[in-house]
Each structure stands twice: as C-alpha cells, then as structure tokens.
Length: 268
Image 1 (cartoon, helix red, strand yellow):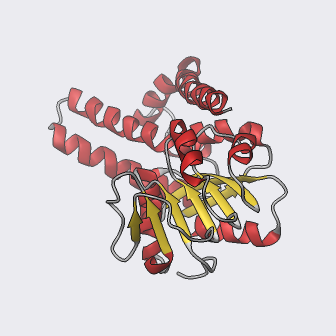
Image 2 (tube, rainbow, N blue to C red; image 1 turned 30 degrees about the vertical axis):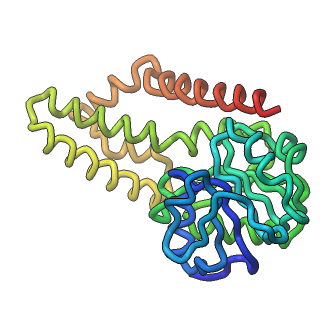
C-alpha cells in the first residue's frame, strides 16, 4: 500500500501506540529511511528508521507526530522549541489534549488530532480525526496515514472527541475484558479454563466479522440468533434486564470520557 505524503516524518515518542502505527505504516509501504524517531532511550524503532535521543539540527519535517503520554506535553514543547521552521502537518495522539492546547504550544501549518486504537497494529484499527479549517492537502495527508491503519472517521465537533476516545480508543480494552469475562463464565460452568478462553476469543472474532459485514444492526443480529424460548434468548434476558449491560457500558465510557476531560484541563 502506498500513497503516504512526501517528505520526512518525525515521531516524538514511540511507545505502544506510536510504535504500532509506525510498524504498520512501514509494512504498508512507508519508506523507513524517511522516518526519524526521537525518544529518551533512542531504542525500539524498526530497522532502517533513524533513532535519536535529541532533536536533529535540521529544518522541520513535513509531518511531525506527537506520540507521547498527555502528561509529557510540556517536555515535548521544550524538546521542539529549537526546531527550525514548522511542520506542514502536526499529528497528535495525545489523549485528552485539545486543539487549542496544541496550537498554544506547537507551530504547524495544520494540526490534526488523531485517536487510534491498538488494532491499528494489524490494520484493523479505528482512527478518529479532528482538525480546525484544514486545507485539502492536509486532510489528504492525515487520511493517508489513517487509511493504512484500518477504519477512520473525521469528528465534526471537538466536544465529542473525548467520547469518541472513550468508545473507540479505549474500547479494545473493554472488549478484551469482556472476552476474559466470557471465558471465566464458561470455566465457572465446568469447562477447562484454556478451552473456555479459546472458545470465547473465537466466538468474539466470528461475531465481530459478521456484524461488520452485515447490513443490519447488532441489535437485530442478536434477535435473529435468539429463537423464542431458546437458550440464547434466556441468556439475553439476563443482559437486557433493566438495561443492565447498557447501563454498565455507559458508566464505563463515562468514566473514560471524564478522565480525558481531566487530562485536557491539565494540559491547558
């Protein structure tokens, strides 16, 4: 897969998410020789990528990505303050750090907030994007990076970005927890724990693919699986009682959204 924007790419930080994105970009055609990773250790970058511990004495790259924890935004500002010029595109994956806070600290022709989730590593991720009055070339550049990672969507209102982060950014963690709970429930019924885990994961994989390929909602699919008076319907009755599952997940996402807002306030 090709179509990445021309010019060098610098990554400030290369942790779990930044590293997953970079590995995927290289696997889909990005030339590693155009990439510079700047980290405290100078380690962990893919083969062929320039890895540094300090800002190079060079003009600003075409694309600069902030791939740090939001609490490290001040350190990133200090690191980048000597940079000559400004990047054409600044991509930020700092959870909870809004456009205003980024624009206050960093110079760039266009700033795009991006919130990926961990399945970007296998090209099945979700990346949410937000920008303020971005020109078409910047939109195309951001989409080229996001497209290689899986599904991507632009968020029209930045006020929704914390909710999107809670749903899609944090979502894989909640799905993993559900898979673990499903397996443990199977083990509680007497299945060997390792077998229950395999069955739970395979069931989730098949159901997710089916839902993604379907032209009806997951709610309709659930009702189609559940025959009246059958075992699936009996189990769904437990999940549906008093909207228990919806209430639990609403509380879960609200807690994540609240934390995103707290981090945004700290960054400001």
